Amino acid sequence: MKSKKMNDDEITIIDDDGEEMTYRILFTYDNEDRGCSYVLFFAPESEDEIIALRYDEDGNLYDIESDEEFDEIEEVLNAFQDDQDEAEADEDSSDDIVGDEVA
Image 1 (cartoon, rainbow, N blue to C red):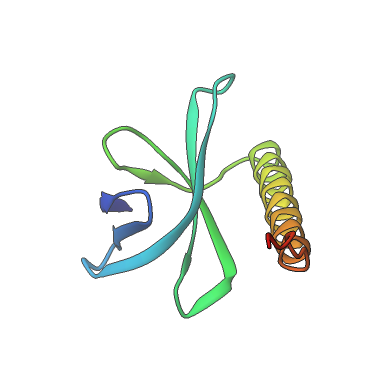
Image 2: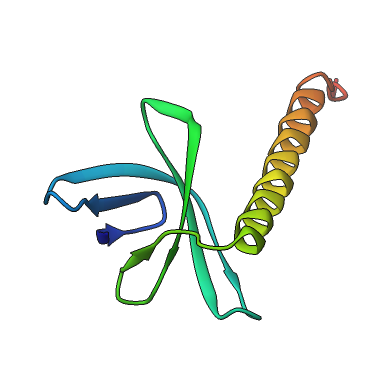
C-alpha cells in the first residue's frame, strides 16, 4: 500500500487495485527505539473504526506485524483518548464558570 499524500489532517491511500481513498488522520507518532513511525486514521463515515499502519519517509505504508507493536499502538491510542476525554471535560467545566461582572 502506498500513501499518495499525507498532511496534518488527511491521508490519501492508493490500494492494490489503484483506487484512491482519503482518510482523516487522528494522530501520528514515532517510536525512536524501534525507528518506526505510525499513523492512526479513520474513514470520515466510520469514525469508530481506527486503522493503524507503520509508514516511512517515502510514504510507503506497512501493516502492523507483531503483537508488541499492536499492544504499543493500543496503549498510545488509549492514552490519546483519555487525554481527549479530559480536555473535553475541562472544556465543559470551564463553560460553567461565570466571570465577575465589572460595574
